[in-house]
Image (cartoon, rainbow, N blue to C red):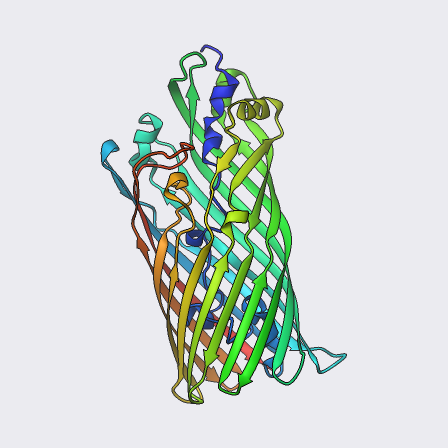
Length: 426
């Protein structure tokens, strides 16, 4: 076969990951209790998951505690494109994450509480039937999938600034894992016409560091205010990309690569009100600065041929231009008796991605979420459960957009999430 131009063969890298932490690709509520209350937990922060939500709350918790919970995320994505005769539903996959957190009194002083968590703040993905999207790969059935996992190792400390004010800080050590498969197009060097498709795939991991600052102010026994700030965290993802079609041009079919990505700056504020000893109402506003972290991603291929070809066409740069987003969260808790507590909640999670850069493998959908949960205590042992259903708002992409990155058609995703945990107090 005629030697293909390298500058045209690397179309596979056009669909670089939209974000490892997109609103539709992350766990919005860490812990069964907070999940059951719609994630309105910054102003409450009264269990071991305060390590994530607001580490200042740890100092107000009694004794020592260790809790483990498992969360199962089940997305159901749909895609319609009448021009190509596509009306498909993604595979029903389960994205299961184990989590472990605990806290204890500092042995040096009773004014400090120490916490440690190993948990998954982000983990999801999507997988489409290759035959349903074959129209996008010249009739060739290829794989379309993304799979994301992020683990955070987080030591935390909390202390009393005065009788009413508690402060806390947590170190976040992020370990990200990302896999993707999609078609890669091979083009004629003279006409630019697509002459074949092959399977593009990549796998990468990376480590980043950040901090969470928290404050909790008890205005009265019935009212508390909380504030939490999670810093922007830069991560270099390193891995290997594969494209067997590169052999048609006489080039290596594999290349190592680096890609700088980032978690956004996140700020949360909330209030918790307890009209009675049994009833709690919580309200949160949580803001993510996507515009400073999800603007463009650049892939640096190590192989000279891959690097030269992708940089010559600019295909190593993926444009996102996400917008800042504000989540609104509400939660209610009612203690039926000393053993059983019931919870419910709601939150609104707007899509940060504009239609012009919408990505089929990394859906960014606006959600309205309903949540439910319960706890049952047996002495020192507590069982927690939470459930949420995210109702997605359909997004219509009419054109590929300015950067030819968006996939035209009707996109949507609904998500079911379960979280179950058990904890022991000392």
